[in-house]
Length: 336
Image 1 (spheres, one colour):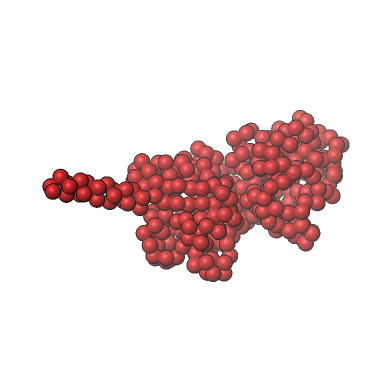
Image 2 (cartoon, one colour):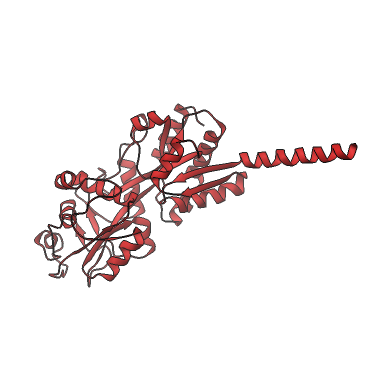
């Protein structure tokens, strides 16, 4: 009898242990863009706390759907949800890391950071109205460059993506004609050019096609040493894509906790701001439950300890001022 009781107690202990381990798993799903940094943070966090994070990189739409249905502990989206959308699904939203979009070119003799472009010219290139690199609008900004009298090959994404959402939102912000005729979104009906799948597809087309221009994520451009342009920002300054210029865009933009941080970072007002930027967001249920608190604890840890790893992976951490706003927002919603 004692032996049977002992085995029963052992089994009960094993079951309790397995249940405890199951409770220490956080499940998230959504945007593909932040997957590498979330995975790296999760690995370090697990070593310290024993809590595991399982993040499914299924795209922003999938992340929104799964957290709305509460089949995951948190969702992730490169596209911010409007306050009324969040209220309907009983969600909160906060930014986690900053990303952005960089135009890249393939023009003989032109090195990274040499070609200057402004918003009007970018718009007209993608509208198919500025057709050659020798166009007066481009030559006027680049009088010292030897630009060819060749047709511009425009390259864009063929698949739906957060990168395209940021880029087309920028064009809609700075160019009324683009907003009216094309609009913004994860995929649009492009007026000109050829499409490549993913950042890799766009980059490959640009590298293979002489006199071409495309757009890719900042991290991808930097990791692959692509020939980026400089851009004229809202303040009238020509700026390089860099950690500093993305941080300036985030720091000078008006992220409002009262609006659940709903904001596109494009065309930020800072003098040193990169003009095509965006945050990637976490979506979390408002319910007061342990998993929500654990999700917040994870991102709080990441905000305090994850900046070096984010930069190593070529992501831009949130500025301190924005982190403070997010932490206050958690407290205001009773989840911390």
